[in-house]
Image (cartoon, rainbow, N blue to C red; front, side):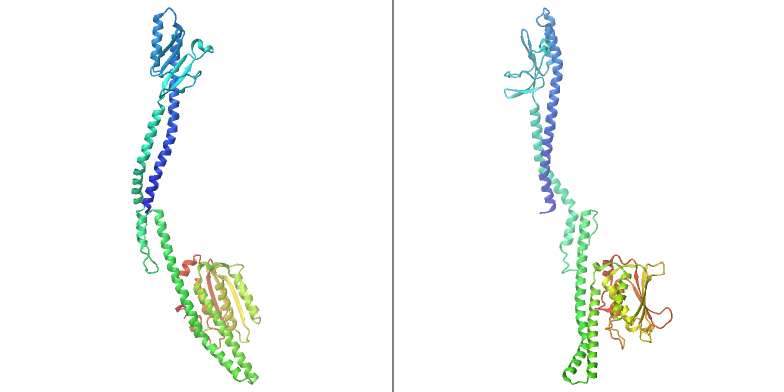
Length: 488
């Protein structure tokens, strides 16, 4: 059932009920007003009639027939449309309309009351005038036809007629108005009825109608479709990442696994191998196993970086993160000499696991490749705000005392699987650092040491206040460090 039809039926059913309810209230108010007005009129007429009745009683039975006749006529004229019954010594005087047959009158009717004579209702009011005022029975009665019920019946009929007419008329009017009012919604329904994000790339094209509900619904539908597209894209990225992980792992692990197989065959086929040769084979097995494990860990970290969602970002104290990373390096490599210079607190908006992995790899790279001529790994870590007042940037510097990197080769160190001839690593550590810098909209540079001594400085810059709208930022980044060109 269409919305306009529902509105028409609802209005067509509710309006008569409202008319009837309003009519009932109106009848109650009109009834009170009619009866109050009727009683007030009868009391006002009783005041005039009582004055003329008293004047008549003063002369009735005296020797002034002309005056008696004049006052009697004045009494009759004052009655007009009300009936009067006056008890006099010689009998009773009646004038105006009277109940027929005469009803039994109540002993007291100082306030108007209703009595029934035949099939007609009358208002009755009694007064004591003349000598009756001294405590006798009422001697003046006034009668007025009670027409309030007839008037109320007329009002009741008109209210009922109005309710019966209101149902079809308001229903038709409501249908016409609702049909026009929901026309933008029907247009929106027609535009969306053919949209199937699984089979078509067409999306909702909505022109604002200045109707808040319709425009809000259209915006919600557009948001839902956009989110669907984003999720489809992210699912595709996840599948591509999984395939790339499997393919890369299969390719990169083949060599260490074959080498390990060869060493295992040597140990199996030559149980009487010379102890020195056996120790060399076992040492080679250990190195290959460590390389294999490191490769898997790095591939997993790259895959996590390619798939991280905006919900993983939060405000972090980068000082605490760097201190924790340095503490881990000192614990695993107690021979390393690491000095740290940081501010009290520097906050960024980022992914804690990713940033921690980036700092760990920078320190590990300095420990492996940054040894001085005496073989000691001396590392200086500095964390500060940028000195340029135009930018709010946190600067992390890691300096070593190694042989350094020539300018022409500095970009290559961030490529996937780039390793030196003597490197024991997987060739993915600095690639992971570059990935995290890109995810956090930062910059990284390979520089000479500022003091002119041999060595390398890795300088990482991150926005101090962070990227607050991580959802928008992540959706714009080419996150293909494991699967595509970003990591090449």
